[in-house]
Length: 94
Image (tube, rainbow, N blue to C red; front, top):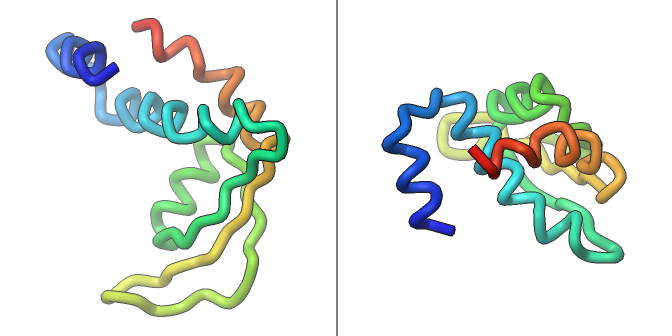
């Protein structure tokens, strides 16, 4: 898999495409698990980017200021991730 990503990197993939590929790879284990869900603390700016890509999340609690940025605890069940996955899984075959 790493060799595939390295060869894709040589093909001059845009930054946003690379980010989308990495997000698909990150959610594959969640999609493949029967009761999969994502629980994370993420930077507020990154959360806006993730949301703009169509990845739905629910805020779990209050945001906390960590290392000069606002950190938000989020939850995303498998069902929330499926739309993004189905729409972008073809990126893995570039």
